[in-house]
Image 1: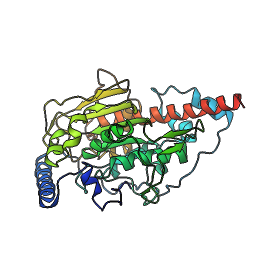
Image 2 (image 1 turned 180 degrees about the horizontal axis):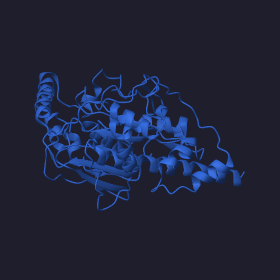
Image 3 (image 1 turned 90 degrees about the vertical axis):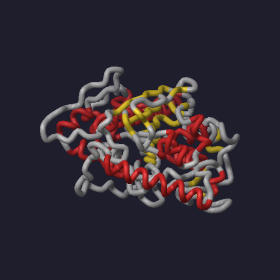
Image 4 (image 1 turned 120 degrees about the horizontal axis):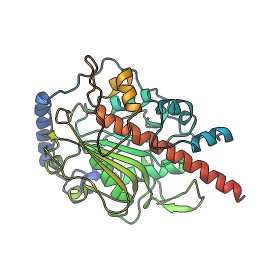
Amino acid sequence: MIRPPAAGGRWRHVARGEFPLRGRSAWRATWAWAVLITALGGCAASTPTPQASPAAVPTSAALTRPAPLDRATEDRILALDPDHISAAEVHDVLARAPAPRVILLQGSIAPVTMEPFAQFLVAMGYPAARLRDPRDGSVSQSSFGDSAALAGTLAWYYEKEGMVPMLIGHSQGGMLVVKTLHELAGEFRREIPVWNPLADAPEPRSAITDPVTGARRQVVGLRVPYAAAIATGKLPRVLLGQWEVLPILRQVPDTVEEFAGFFIAWDLVAGTLGTAEPYRATGKALVRNVTLPAEYSHIGIPLTRHLAANAVTRAWIEGYVPAARRPRPPSIDGVDTSNILHAAELWHGLKKHWCIETQRRIRAARARAGHA
């Protein structure tokens, strides 16, 4: 679990701008925001009903370097088209390959977690062990953590497992995703300590051994394959006193290959009134903005497990390909399609970059063998 650094006191991240209000002012802001979300949650349109006893995500979260693949399996993986991966290819081909970790960051109100979305991903075929925190087994991380610690954690995982994790954040979690990308770009400090998630503490170094090249490289400059922010608004940043992030909240640096930003058309919690300022790349990052229908609920948006359990919605998601003109979701009496659009977008992005990262590893290994 990503936590604030222990050095300098339990709330050192306050001084770094993660939650800069202090004392009574901080508590008043927190309680005001909690009351606002609770009130709006009660009147939100079409809030999905909590899913009844969904299957839990398996608890295995061992840190392992992927076993070597045989040549035939490698060839099948290299033949995949990352933008068009079928359900059969996920099950029969990608499932044999290593997968990047996915760190899911929840919003500012603890009861609303990303666990239902983790259950959706596992049901769709993503390896459960790559969703769980190896320290405590959790699949939904706090968004009140420190962005430098999260950046250092990404580097630690890359060195140990050979793949940079992907990031998905809901509400305030999306803010932490964006701020971490800016951390990796070196916009807050020149050096970032490597952060050990097992010890939940920094290591006395700011560089790792690149598992692909064998060279030493700084944490700063690391590139995330895929990241997303879901219903992340500027209004909550003001109410929570997170002013430091406001100028960069919609800027996406080159420390991510592909970024997806999701807005609900009328999201009172996020402060979105019909339209929202889009995310923009500051360089060459691929950025996709997706506006979700007004009937989506800010609080209920992580509830997606039911979509993988129903044959109709699952098939639609498995065949989904992002396009300028969004395909129409299925409309069948008795079929719950709530939250299907962002679920489909995210599943496409995750399996796409799972494929790309695995292909990259195979090509790098073959290149090294060819020069041995």
